[in-house]
Image 1 (cartoon, one colour):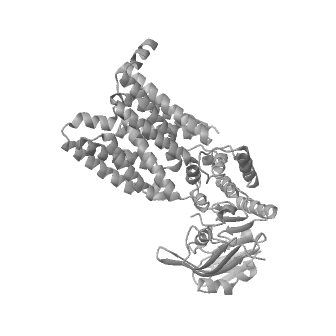
Image 2 (cartoon, chains in turn yellow, blue; image 1 turned 90 degrees about the horizontal axis):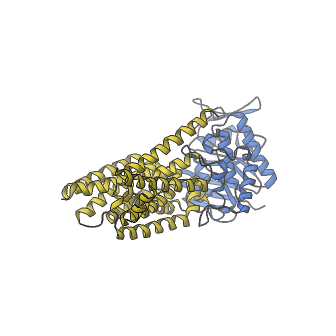
Image 3 (cartoon, chains in turn brown, cyan; image 1 turned 60 degrees about the horizontal axis):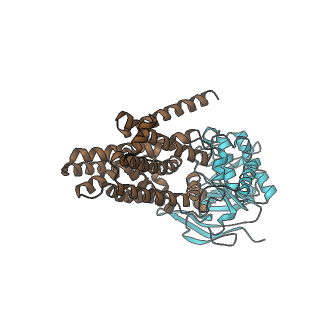
Length: 273
Length: 265
C-alpha cells in the first residue's frame, strides 16, 4: 500500500490536492477556532452560501469561480462585520440574505450552459481538479489570511472573550470585527475548493469545534484544531484515491466520527463528575 | 483632595431619548461608592459614559483629570453583559489571560511576567481554586469572580463593577462584597459598585450615588437614602422605611419595593 501511495504522489493532481487541502485546512482550523469562541458559526456557514452567487456568476461570465466567490463573500463579510457584536443575534437577517444569495446563484446556474458539472464542483468541491494557477492563488490567499489573523490574534482573542472590557481598553470592536470577517470570507472560499460550498461548514467549524470541546487553553485548542483539520483532509484524500469515493465524503465523514467521539466522551465526563 | 471623577451637569442622550440630565458628582480617591437606582435608570449608561464608551450630550466629565476614555488603562471594568462559553472548554485562567496584554498586536502568547499577573488577579478575586476548570461548568458566583479577576488585570486604580451581585445567592453576595472591600483596603483603589439592593453594601460603602428619573444624587447613605431626596429624584412620593437594620424603598402609590426586588435580568 505504501508503494501505491508513493505512486499516487507522483501525479501532479494528487500533489496539488494535498497542497490546496492542507492550506485550506490550516487556515480553516485557525479561523474556525475564533468562529467558535465568537459564536458566529451561522455567519460562517452563510458566507460560503453567499459566495455561491459569486462563484456561479463568475462561471456565467466565464471568469474564475474562486475569484467570484472571493469578491462576493468578502463584501458580505464586511457587511456582517459592520454589525459588530450584534452579529451573533442577527440570525434572521443572515438567513434571509443567505436564501436570496442561493436563489440568485441557482438562477445563474440555470442561465449557464455547462450546468451540472460546474454546479457539482462548486457545491461539493473538486479538490482533484485544482490547477497550478489555483495553487498559486491558494498559497497567496492563505498566507495573507493567516499572517493578518496572527498579527491581530491577541486583540481578537481579548475582544472575543470580553468585548466590553476590550472596548474600554481602547480596542475598536468595529474594525476587528470587519477584519475578522474578511479573513473568514477568504477562508471559506479556499475551503470551498476542497469540500465545496455545501460542506465548508465541516472544514471551517468541524476541527475547531471538536478541539474547543475539550481543550482548556488557547494554544492547545488552536494546535489540536490544526492537527484534526490536517489529518481529516490528508486521510480523506488518501481514502478517496484508494476507494474512488469523493474526498468531500471522506473528509466530512472523518470529521463527523471525530465529533461524535468527542461529544460522547465530554458528555460522559460531565455526567460522571 | 482632587477628585478622581468629576461630573458637572452631565447629560446623556441615547437613541433620541434623554437618559440622564444634570448629573453632578465628585468621587475621591479610595472611596467605595455604591451606585443604586431602579432598572433602566441609567446606572450602566453612566458607567459607560465614564469609560468614554458612550458620548455625553451636555456637561463636563473628567476621569483622573482627563476626558473619559483617556485613562482607561488604569480602570478595571466588569461589564453587566455576561460571557457565554457553552461551546468551549476554555478555562477560567485562559479567559483571564486573554485580558492581560490583550490590546497588544501579535499572538496571545504570555510571558512569565504576564502569567504572574494573571495568577495575582485570580488570587485577589479568590478564583485560583477553580482557575483550571472550564469556565462553562462554573457556578454563577464562580463565573462572576473570574470576571472580577479579568477587571483586576493591570492593577487598576479605579474599579467599575456593573451589577457584580446579580443572580447571586446571599452567601455569594457577601463573599463578593468582602472580596471587593479587601481589594479596596489592600490596593487603595476607588470602587464604583453598581447594585440593585442597598442593604448588602451598608457598612462597606463610603457614599451612595443614586440614579433615578434621569437625575442622580450623591452623598452619605443616610442623606441620600431618605424620603425627601428619593422623592425629588423619582418625582413621586417615596417612603424610605428602616426596619430590622434594613432599608426598604417603597413608592407611596403602588408597591415598588426596590430593596426586596431581586432582579435576574
